Amino acid sequence: MEQVYFTPVGIALKQHELYGLDDNLLQEQAMFLRSDIIGWAQQHFILNDQQLNWLFQQDSSFTVDFAVTISNGLLGRYDFDIRFGGSEIWKSKRIDAKADLPFKKIKIFVERKN
Image (cartoon, rainbow, N blue to C red; front, side, top):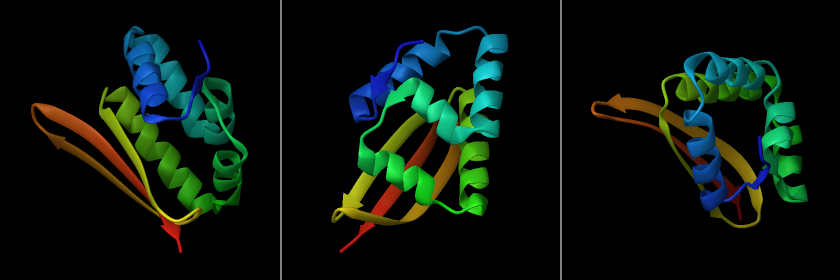
């Protein structure tokens, strides 16, 4: 699989690539992500230092919940909507996974500390 930049366009490209896989291959990707979200992200995305630092600074309880939510979203073939807001230092996270049929979406909002 091709590495892409972790930007809205790159995320859309990666989503398209992943959802082009058959169910078994997509499940393999989702289980890899669930077991090692940082390794999975580094394998699939070109991450800048700030993005890598953010991943490595998260406590394990958040990382586990985040990985489960994202992997479940992959398995359900949800659309991903990831947005960053605020200043340059990221501090808190909100994840919302919804299945308002016919649309399934995972919204991730990362606030930044002023």
